Image (tube, rainbow, N blue to C red; front, top):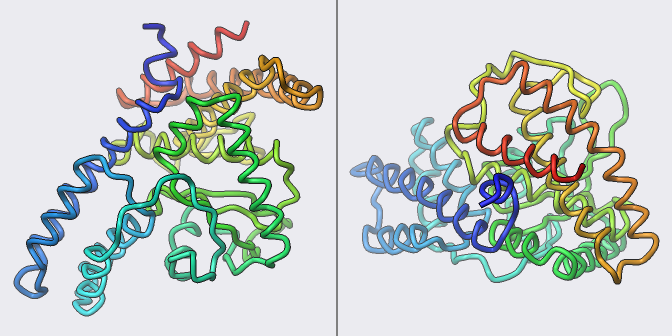
Amino acid sequence: MKPEDKFFKPSAASGFALRAHFNDGFADSLEYLFSVCEPAISVDTERAATLLSRIRSGSRETPLLYSMHFKLIEALQAEDTASAEALIKGMLDEASAEDGIAIVRLGSPSCGWDTGLVTSYFCETDSLFRYVEPDPARAAQTEANLYGAMDDLRGFAPALAAEMEALVSTVILATGVQVAGDEPREFESVTALRAFGAVLFNADSVASRLQCVVSLIHEHAHMVLFAHSPNEGVVTNSPDERYVSPLRSDARPVEGIFHQSFVLARMIYGMNLLRKLDTASQHQHDFADEFIAQNVPRFMDAFETLHQHARFTSQGLDVLSSSKAYMDTLG
């Protein structure tokens, strides 16, 4: 097996394995929470056992189920029995995610998400924005571009698309309202560990179908790392330890530089497949060539920053080494 094949290159099998790994830890945590609820909170033990068995089988669960789990932790810590009881009932009622990637709009009946829940967990990742219901006309165009982007991915990167569909169940279209920061910023897309399986996407984006391809690869790569190391992480550096990297204008925690590096390598991987496609248009070839030419040096510079400053966990070292091995094949 080539070094880059072990941890870096996507496949349907790796998607299933990552999901199963994430679910194992999730089920263990949920089982413990159910156990500590008694006797103050009654738990339907038969239905709880059925849910835990389903999760441990590697099921594809909704982001809402994962998020309710974290809300339950918060409720128990606050000794909020009523909220905890309602959350447990909600989890036991929640069905597995349907096949494919659903694209829904924040605030619509099909979303199935409580706006406050989405705001709380996605704002932890990007605190510059609060998220509101999108304009219907703009959301419709963005939705069409995203569905088209998934069709394109299935065509030129089927293994990547299959891994993505194993981990990503929902794209939520929203409008971001900036609430912090001195300079105007545009919300693009974001993922969060506590909303695993969901991508929050800017419904007002003017991103083309091809740019949506890149954004989906970007956010999916974050989810791969969430699933790979949900508890241990990829580095042991303190969040207060920050360095300048070529990927951002501001100094970033080492964990952030690591995520950015892996994500960038995955986007380069996708664009490299696109530019090799015989049936790709000249525009697609040019877009992919330019993306790779601009971003390979940025990855290499970020790799050097990590090499100098990062204190890797064993999992983190494996992932970064395999990413670098792939990048070295580009010449």
